[in-house]
Length: 110
Image (cartoon, rainbow, N blue to C red):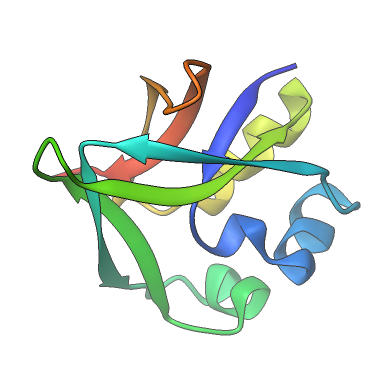
């Protein structure tokens, strides 16, 4: 099962129900070397699912920067649904988390 690190709307129970049809169990973790920023979303379906046009986004930061979040264990189909949900402002990359686990995460595409 793919492991995805989330720090924003994918942690929201309503978004999880909308995308995955279930609440996904999560485990706290953190991502070093990145900082949080915000992006304005224009996709109506994403706004409807999340309830807001203002979403968090990760950008490279200083070595001391750490973003707190959670890991979700998704099926391949659920990971594909998450890919469709994340707009072009994001790109999915694989990272090593503070726990040492490898996970996918959506970061700023620019």
